[in-house]
Amino acid sequence: MDNERNQVADRYLAQLRQAGRGKLKIYIGMSAGVGKTYRMLQEARQMLDQGIHVVLGLVVTHGRKETEALLEGLPMVAQREVFYKGKKMSELDINALLVLHPTWVVVDELAHSNIPGSKNPKRWQDVMELLAAGINVITAVNIQHIESINDEVQRITGVQVQERVPDDFLQKADEVVNIDLSAEDLITRLKEGKIYDPAKVETALRNFFQPEKILQLRELALKEVATQVERKVEQEVPRTVQSRHERFLACISSNEATARKIIRKTARLSRYYQSKWYVLYVQTPNESLDKIPLDKQRHLINNFQLAVELGAEVLQAQAANRLSKWLVPVAIPLKLINVSVPDIGNAILEVVKEKQITTICIGKPHLSFWQIVLHTGIFNQLLRALKENEVDVVILS
Image 1 (tube, rainbow, N blue to C red):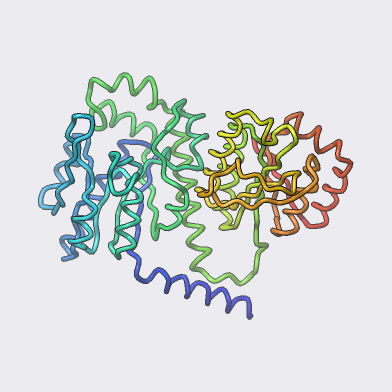
Image 2 (image 1 turned 45 degrees about the horizontal axis):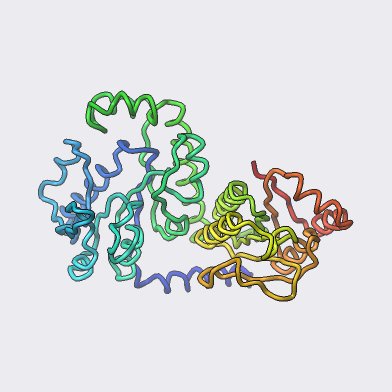
């Protein structure tokens, strides 16, 4: 009973903390052309008819006639014009919106990177500023721009998406809506010239707009929205049965690609369970300050930064009592643990106990990692300890 009252109190306090923040509604789609901008404009028109103060902060129609027709009569804040590399370009005028302070604003192309020199590097950061000012925002993004599934999107499409939105931004949404179409309907719209210029249709059909790719991206979009709905249920619907509180530990090495995949997949698991998670890197003797190659050092820093952006606490275990400062810039929060490396098993055990870890996530075992673990003489101790503490081990592909 006390636990249930505490949960109700936590939800109430969270609502109080967000009382001054604007509401955030995100439309998610599997690709361009499914109708996200169209739906946002429809909603804006409905608000306008109801007397709600709504404006268009930035809308990109891509020349689609059906979408452009909905612009008529909707108030739009003029975009900020800037010159970059000799070209005149337009950006969202964040300052004008803050001064106008509408009840709702529509901001398209959420994953867009702003022109260098803008107030914020990314458009999603502009949206965060609007929300902090108490302005409600409707925005849209394609599934391939979400950070934690970047590797999966690349596997499906063969393209590395550069403009990405951090997962914790989506967690701030009050409502997430999936704009769904079948692969057949989307391809039909493409062939009818409703998505791209007719000259680009054949190229699009040979590359991105293939039924099997669309189907997989559609699945990702549906899963993402389902995860957001479950998160909202967890936060707002009282639970009568207390479930185990999950805590994830991602164990990474200096292998750039493998570590990045482990980090992103563990991030998604932690989001699904709404749980705290950690990243542990054990510095082996071969990766000490005087031995580690510069490229591996750079990859480690990048992966630590990615983990922090996705909401992890980064832990580093190393042999020396002297704490090395070379590995991570000050901007990245990092906790250092003194253990007897190469005793990787002890490092994992220490973190499992201290952080009350319930699930360990590792990549497909590579020889060097398991050679170190197996030759420490505590592998069986590690397995016994994990069993005694009911800790699961997940091997990620």
